[in-house]
Image (cartoon, rainbow, N blue to C red; front, side, top):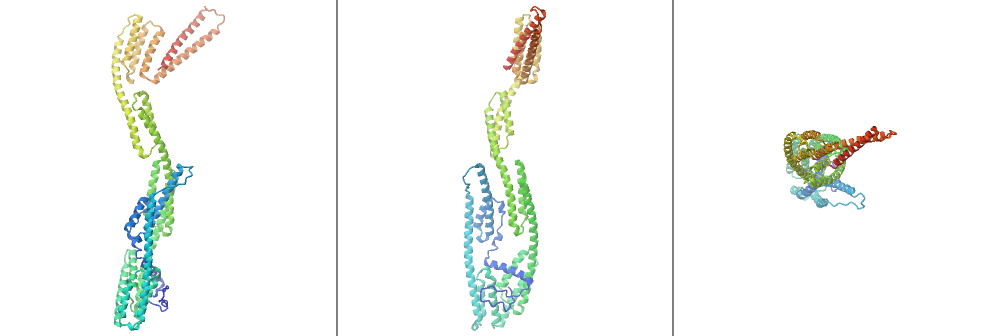
Length: 626
């Protein structure tokens, strides 16, 4: 308390108007003392002001709306309603921010799906209603508490004013001086239990009270020995406080030390009575000087903290700028966006780990941070909305491919089905991603259908390979036997024998592609046998061609069939051109008689070429039937 009185300071002591401090404080100490007086005045009004310090604050912006709701419900259930004011307000701010973003996304999705709809967008979100119910409960309980608190503060104020009036009566009543000290003690005890009062009345009421206590000691003619003992006791208590403050000046935890200094000021002012007038100014000067030293240390600490906060501000602005740059980059793939998301998450973690910024910049910094985050999320959500649309289309395509695979998996027409199954597999590879919840099941179903078919194909080919190996061995043996075959000289008999050998060879079966050279050896033997036969060229060609057609049909080699077709077409073109040339030559021979040898030779060649053309035309017709 401010000890030294000025005679002009207390002329309004009987009222409740503000009065100046009853002690003279040097100008350079006034700020230090006033800061403590103000803090104590605030705490005297509501002694729960610091109860929230023990309740940890989570990173509310990183929590989901469900987690924020759970946290508010827990605080309301477990903590004093006055201790969670800051927590509740920040929880609501974080919840509404996330809720607004959530509703905006839902609205955008609605507009995308219903671009021409005239229906006003509405979205029912039960969690929002539950959160508001919890917050309203908190607010109602808080309002009820402060309403009752204000009533109690005013009642306590009335009680303290009444005590001051009793004290004034005690001082003015000269007839009761013998037991005045005893009554003063009772009044002081009553004062100490009167409870908190409004902060704007705190200093005036306390100064008024102490003014009259000092009047009691200074103006009443009490027993000197009793008064001196009381002064001595009060001096000892104040000297102990001074000693403790000197110790506090050496503490490393300045904030904690300053809090204790506030308590010591309250004790000095509220619990300890006056000391002898001759030393009041001196001891107060000593206490207030130590207070200034502690205040200066705290200001130096705060200056360092302000410097750190300014540095934090610069760091956070850099992070916001980097987030803004990332949000402007165009990403075209899921992996690229995942890398960007990791970058943003890392930047957010750095942002929250940096620490406080200057209070006057806090709102602006937070707004810019939220804006950068929101811009990034808008671009990200737009990409994934488009990706989701593409994935739905891919889902439709893959379901169709699975249906095709199921339709073909039991086919035994391997030559026709295998290319189709391979085409389906290629299309599957080219088709993009589907929604994750379908991906594994679709792939398993498609893979099982393909495996079912190709397992059958491989089994058939393995069996076919065994048959082809056996056919090769038989044909090799038959080729050795055919080499010993001799013509009898009977044209018809020998021709039938050769045809029989051709049928036997064909009935043995096909051989592997790598062993098909044996067919050439067989054809060479046939050529030798046909040369020995006195057959017409047409008949020979027919038998040979029939054998060749059978081999082409057996191999089903489309390339060889195509080559054979082209060869025949070229032969026909050559014959057609030759016939045209011969017929054209006849037209240039004038006055030639029909029995002219040259003319007869030309006509003979024309007929020969026409017969051969018919033969090749028949071959072309037959090969096309393959």
